[in-house]
Image 1 (cartoon, helix red, strand yellow):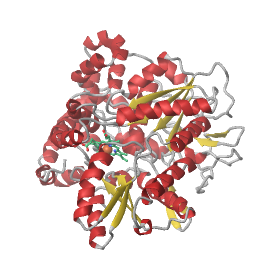
Image 2 (cartoon, rainbow, N blue to C red):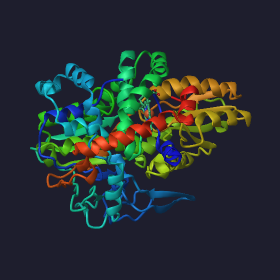
Image 3 (tube, rainbow, N blue to C red):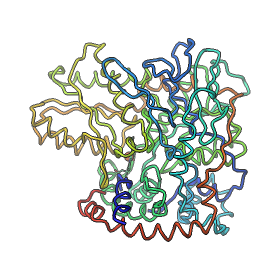
Image 4 (cartoon, helix red, strand yellow):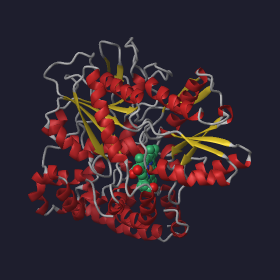
Length: 578
Ligand SMILES: C=CC1=C(C)c2cc3[nH]c(cc4nc(cc5[nH]c(cc1n2)c(C)c5CCC(=O)O)C(CCC(=O)O)=C4C)c(C)c3C=C
Ligand SMILES: [Fe+2]
């Protein structure tokens, strides 16, 4: 039992600190359609795969750097070492299939969300009557869903990624798509920039979302912690996801609320993302592409599910999915794609919609240049720019994401920093730089070094001027406005750093938006793009069996007790780690 308890502790990963759940669950509940996976989470276009000038790229997982096309689909790719300048990075890292696990049935038990969602979201009100329906027992037990192991197994089965499923279009762009469980001919092809008049192009911007008001903080946090890509529990413990999410969101809410209060009483994310969507639409128009741009948030309004419903209503014929995270992480892009997968596989219309997903874009020249421009501009504000330490502060993730689940986030982050620094060097800027990770929460180990520790060390070492560069995210949000601008600044000044600066988030910087527009155009799927149906996994089948759920529930409860009252958890709560 003790061994088991230790294992659980090492698996439990919780970061930041309700009662609203996600709307896809309502949809699952109300729409009975044929189950067919159509949007495969591995149908992922990494912008690295797109050659800028359209020359023939070969399109195999060649591990080449720069603009070389690489098959950068996340799942089950063998680690492929790559040399970038003098820096060695891992180009293709294995991804854990749990990041794309199928449905999240445990949260659709939450009636509060259903009510709140329907009240607040007119778009879904057409489903409202069905909310009164009783669910079958098998679904009522669905919160015990456990798919980590089975997904991992299916992942391992398909370790050969790019060979048979890769196609290339006429201008030499190479793409690779891999199925989850079934690896077949599910390929997203790409076309040149001529668009048939009957095409109705949609771009779906994915983002995390944030509470609009202080009252939203608690339910927002609940949604976040109810996400199995945020709190990654071992299979047997997934029945704890929901109670744990409630517990942690209650514990985290006061601290979080304080943070949002200090930045004006809510998150600026919705407003900024909407502005980015408008700017992108305009930039696409300037490039002769008329497109509707939608915003889909993972944990708050407008939810991804709302955006998808609008896409359906608008009868979009081609869709490009663009997560607003430059680097891929299981906890961000991975989680959003998993939600999309669950929606798409249940819907006949969506299942036929040609879709391409830009899974990461930190390597794009336009993004790197935009970042370098912003850094240069801020550096010039210092009296002695050449003495400024460039301090990249990235959002952290638990170490287990990277080491156990194969999250490529850390490698991509390091490569991203390398590319930005190279760009600065090209402009004669040779300052020292460092990378640290911020925003840790919970009793687990996060990526190191930690931002707060490094700031203190730099101050002690005599660094006098420091320029903080937020790098995981392209909008201002609580972690730039509160954590960096207030907490870290204060800490840095206390530690001996005298001159503090912070690079603003890209927000709607025109070079950045223009580059996103290029990324969208390059990623446009052709009408002939096919979708692949993927069967339910063994564990999903299990999830429909009430007896198996009852057994899981029984053992899960015993283990939950051991876990929740373990000394490490108690200590974490006492030390305010949530
Ligand atoms: C285990 C928990 C979390 C992981 C892992 C995580 C990864 C992660 N998050 C972002 C970007 C954002 N996070 C935001 C808010 C936020 N994130 C978590 C938890 C995890 N994030 C919490 C609890 C919160 C709420 C705020 C708080 O209490 O600290 C936001 C929204 C900010 C806003 O303005 O509303 C963003 C954006 C990235 C990029 C990332 C991994 C790479
Ligand atoms: Fe976060």
